[in-house]
Every structure is written in C-alpha cells, then in structure tokens.
Length: 291
Length: 134
Image (cartoon, rainbow over all chains, first blue to last red; front, side):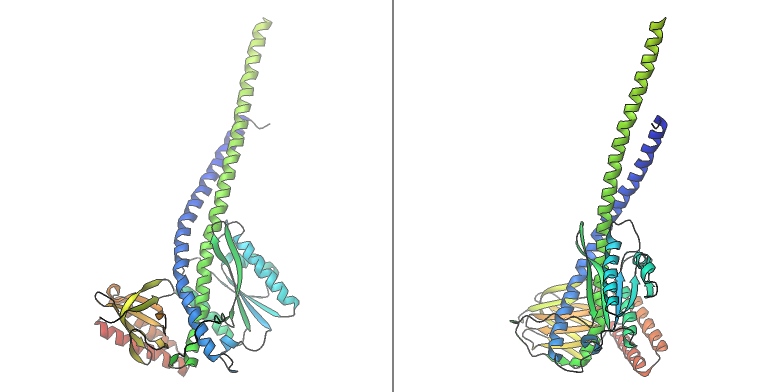
C-alpha cells in the first residue's frame, strides 16, 4: 500500500506529463492547419502537371524510342525506394506504418531476386529500416533544419534521384509516404515515379491536335524531370500534414490517459486519507473508553 | 473589350491566379506570344520573364515567372511556373540573388551542355533585370 506522500508525488508527476502532452497536442494542431493549407495549395500544380503530361505523353505514345523517364529502361531489375517519414517520433503509428509498407515491398522484391536500394528521407524511417536493410540504404536525407518544405528541397531530392537514374543506378523508383485523409486517418502509400505513371486519357475526352514549341521531345525532356520533383514535393507536403495529424491524435490520447490516471490516483489518495482519519478516531475513542 | 477566357497561374507551392481574363502575354522559350480567346491548342516551355495579364476589366497585372510551361487548351490557358511572383512585390535583391546563383551555376558547369544552359539562363535573367529597371 503506497503511502499518502507517494500518491501525492505520483499525481504531481502525471499532472506534469499531462501538461506536456497537452501542449504538444496544441502545437501539432496549429502546425497541422498550416501543413494542410500547404498540401492543399500544392495540389493544383500537381494535378495540372499530370494533365499536361497525359496530353503530351499521348502524343508520343507508341514511339519505340520514347524518353527513358517515361518508357523505362526496359529492365526491371534494380528498384529504388524513396521512403519519406518524419524527423521526430511521438506521432502514433505514423512512422512505423510507412516503414512497414516499405519493408513488405522490399522483402517481396528480394524474394523475386531483384536488387533493392533505399533512399531515406527523414530520420525515423532510417532508424526503423537500418537494422534489416543496412546494406541496401544508400543515403539518408534529413530535413530537420527545414522549417517550411518548399520546392527547393523537393527539387534537390529530385535531382539526386535523376542523377542516379542517369548513371543507371536503378530501373524503377517508388515513393513511399502517408496520404493525409483526416486527423485520424493517414494512408501509407506507394507511388511509382520512374517510369512515370501516366493516367490514361478518358476515352470521351476530345483528342485535340496540339502545336508544340520547341517540339514534343524537348518539352517532355523538360517536363519529366520536373514531374519527379513535383511528385516528391507533394509527397513531402502530404507527409507533413499526416505527421501532424497523427501527432495530434496520439497526444490527445495521451492527455486523456493521463487524465484518467489522475482521477484514479486521486480517488485512491482520498480513500487512503479517509481510512487513516477513521483509524486515528477509532484509536482515540477506544483509548478514552478504556480509561 | 475582347471576349474573356479562363486563365490559371500555378506555382508548385500554390495557385496564384485563376480568373477570367481578356489577354495574356507569355514569355515563350522561342519568343513572346499573346493568348486571346479561342487560341489553337498549343504548348510551350517558357523562359524567365514577365507574364502580363489583362483581366476582363481593370488594369493589367504583371508577374515574374522563372521557367515552366504554358498550356493552351480549349478550357483556357494554364501556366505551370517553377516560380511566380507578382512584379509589385519583387525587389532588386531577389533578381540579383538569382543572377548570382546563375553565375555560380555557370562557374560550376562541367560539360558544354550544362555550360550553355547556364549561360542562356544568365542572359535571360539579365534581360529581365534590365526590363524591370533594377
């Protein structure tokens, strides 16, 4: 049976923890609003990009010597996995669910006898994957010092990926991140970015004859590398929003748990206190009666 | 006043402009061109420069864009810019910074192709700086 002092100390420490989780929840809520706005603001660009790409790609479809970023290298041997996670923990299952998806994907590829290379963006994913895939991880990119993720950061990663592709480092690149649905739902997603997945144009869409300046090949050469960066950017922005959402609900849970714990301990504290008072009274009364 | 059409100016970070406009002048890679309503479907890369937008009513607005695409389709004109800033909020320091970056790129360029690309970009940026009077 813990003494009164022990209980008092324990209540005080849980209260302090609750204050911290509450503060973290509020910070996450404020950051979530900003991250969500950024992710939504970036959506139109990615959407227009896909439409434009579909238009141009339809024009060159069927040509044997299309650009390699669109048609692929012809091989399917080496896979690059770009695993985007958060830099910090304390956000529920956010990091581990992305890492789990990536791990399953990597293991499936290895069973088929393929080579896997992993590029980690964000420290947490690296921590989770390095035990099993230490030999496959080629680089870790940390974005800890970046306050607001913008096109510059995504473009830097994109260039790195493209440089690796140009020297024949891999055949297929897949991007792993969590899509933001709502505060309580983030969906770990795998998206292939090289060769580019082009949505088939709707059958009833009018096929217009475009004029190109300079020409189709030059535009595609410019468009495809940029598409890679844009896809990475939208993945990173979705990821930030998801992280904040996951953190907010995790911290909300923690705050609620701490509240319940405080309630339980306070009840126990009061019961112990009353039992002691009763015991003292009985001692006094029985002492008086004995006289 | 000419008939208006739908115009969208998008940068990776946000949608800058989406409205009905009468005319847009775009700095295409192979020369400036003007888009009016019912322009034939057309796609072009753009060079660093100034996009002049004339709304259906009101004064023309100018935006500085750096690289990207212009896509003219039946639904209107879409500009996907790598970077887009209203000219009013642009200051000389920013252009100077970009020129410095381009100069560094030129100095760092190893092969002929990238050297030519960097030199072209630098020349275009200097043109813009001159045009804006910075």
